[in-house]
Length: 243
Image (tube, rainbow, N blue to C red; front, side, top):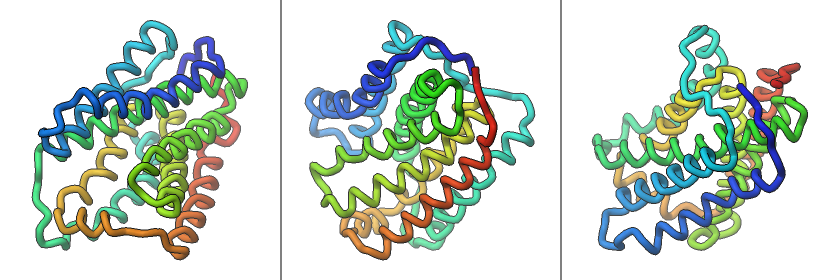
C-alpha cells in the first residue's frame, strides 16, 4: 500500500463527501424513482465524486485487487466471513425472501462507495498521520465510518442511531483490518455488499426493521461486539507498519 502525502484537511473532506453528496443527490435524483434505485444512484454519485477528487487532489493509491496469497487473505477475512454468514443465515428461513436485481445493484454501489471512501482513501490518509501504524489507521477510519451514520438522525431516533454508529465502527474495524492485510479493496466491498444484501431481499424483514427502536439489550450487545472486533483488529494488525 503506497502512502502519498496526507493532511488532516483531506481526511475531513473525505468524511464530508458522504453527507454532502447524499443531500445533493436527494435534490437532483427524480423523486418518482423506486427507493432502491434512488439509493443506488446516490451512492454512485458519492463514488464518482470521491474517485475524481482522488485523481485531482487526494492522490491516494487504491489497491483494488490482489491475487497473491489467496489462502492468507481468506484466513484474514475469516472472522468477518463468519460474522456475515451468521448474521444472514436466518434470512434463508424467511418465506418471502426473493432475489431482486435492483437490490443487488444497490448494495454493490453502497459497498463500493463506502469502502472506496472509508477504507480505500481514509486508511492511507490516516497511515500518513499515524506514521504508518496500521492499527491506528484502521481505528481512525472506522470511527469516521461510524460517525457518518449520524446523518440518519434526520429520520431515526438518537438512541437507535447510537447503536448504528457503534455497529458501523465494529464492522469498519473488521473491514479495515482486512484491507491493510490483504491490499484487496474488492474483497471488503464484496463482504460489505453481502452484509447488506440478504436483509433487503425480504419485504417483511424491511417492515420489521422500520419499526425497530432503541433498546438497552441491543446497545449492550453492540458494545460487546465492539470490544470483540477491537481485539480481532488489534491482533490482525499487531506490529504492522506500512510506509
